[in-house]
Image: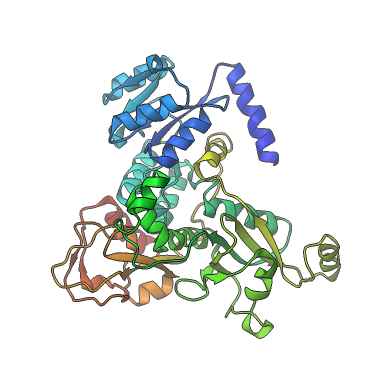
Length: 433
């Protein structure tokens, strides 16, 4: 990849000048810890500030990367953090608010996966002139368009990350569009069947084995995470779900172009320009494309891309936060985003009742016991008054009985209106629609 050649060259030049891109990472869970480790092996880029509510987890992330304990300072004082960073030390803090305030920090990475935290970190970073890299698709799917607008106005970069499925899909999409092909469908693989009733209790043992929080794994298994990722893909490309929730077919790569084609062509799609997920091709991502030129069809067949008229680009891996340094580099050096909601609000991850809910019940969060997410076109969600799942939290109160499997509308709930994400969404709905 040309970007890697340029990145290696420029970062080596920085290192030779004893300079570096200093990054604040908020969240030292699996994704944050992986990023700290990977970045520690890259010249010219430093995970200078690592923030976690439990400071020990942040310390352990740095230690696991081979950083000596004597080089790790712990502080919740912005003045001390600035001092230690200037002295070339690594700093651990317990307050996310400090990430955007540190003078030496060039970019902030949100690796929390919590919608409200992501909204606050992004807003703080933009206001303080820092680039913001979102591993937090949960927040991006709800308020990404307004945050992207604010970032552009502030002349900083708001971006999703390379390595996550939306970023990996965008790589294929940009490749195809850049070469002049017509992209028909994009999407991701899913490595397990959707279980709409999954909750932290049912996945607890698996979560422990995978070193994941039970809520996080439940959000993967009940499909919410997949729907959120597809929403981010939609907002970056203008593509929409063909049907609510997507088709979620079983397929291998060889059969994909035969299935994901129009009904009149023998496939299952009502239209092209769609985003979907496929069981059987995980952990990969795909982009289906075509061309109107006969000579190009001939060349694609000669190159073993299939007999057409549709062809599939497939990336058989995504390395999540291990690829995030690419996005950090692109933001800090080239002022470019890997993936961003440039098309505005195109899709929505709406909220569905996971069980029967009664007046007075409290909801929880993504990957919990009460709700799951499903992708829908934004215009349909708006017409039907459907609630984005990222606005739901433990303070959300049910004010109308809701049946299991029923989409949840605003008039069924008393939302927590004091959150940053709720306030941002209100602005987004007015400004962007």
